[in-house]
Length: 279
Ligand SMILES: Nc1ncnc2c1ncn2[C@@H]1O[C@H](COP(=O)(O)OP(=O)(O)OP(=O)(O)O)[C@@H](O)[C@H]1O
Image 1: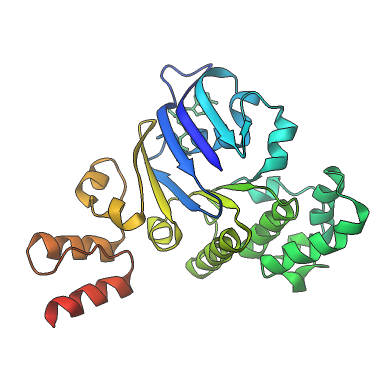
Image 2: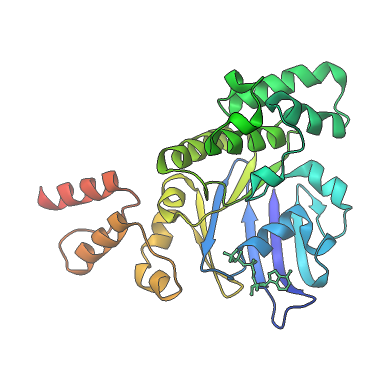
């Protein structure tokens, strides 16, 4: 579905490449979390997926990035945006209307979706994000989590093959963050859409992502199942990525020979590992 091959990019004003030698394959329905220290190249990697790099930021682009067979560097940005939906970090800046249903309709009309499909797509996208009841609400009256879901629904109504989100929970409390991830993970599974999320909250990524990508100084340092990546907590700490506390605790117990080989991604998994060790 998504194939990143030997991708490197240096911004025109950049002294060094923002991303170097990245290789990654993402399947349909796969939920991928990308994290890493500030400036490690997370956003640049996602910009290559939605074509912002190199179409909006010129620079030296090497390798290739393909989504659903489309080369995002070669194709026109409008064609890429039909295949890759994007939700930026500041959703307020993404809104172009003031009412929820108008916001979803705006994208559908802009993409010239046939009239007969518009109502069903609108209803479905709102239902998929659990906000059918907000249809007639003014966007300004919504909470941060609700606004985030409106922004995501507006993009999902366009039925992209892949969805890219930059820190969708940055402004949200823990319960709303978890709710947004729940909805995204379910959507990816049900619709076969590849979902790529840049996120600082590693505990959320560990719980929901199929694949966890760790960036270090422009390079993909790890790309594997969360448990496999989190087993390297010492290396992660060195590159500025903190493991969830439950993971760090179990890794320490394992290093001390107290429990066996399994890595815990969540508090519940940590409890299971400790119970097994005590049994
Ligand atoms: N428009 C630009 N022009 C020049 N250099 C840039 C530009 N945008 C980003 N960079 C540089 O590219 C590198 C990677 O930046 P990028 O934003 O991709 O990293 P990031 O991991 O997403 O960072 P953050 O977590 O701070 O958003 C950084 O060194 C950054 O300074």
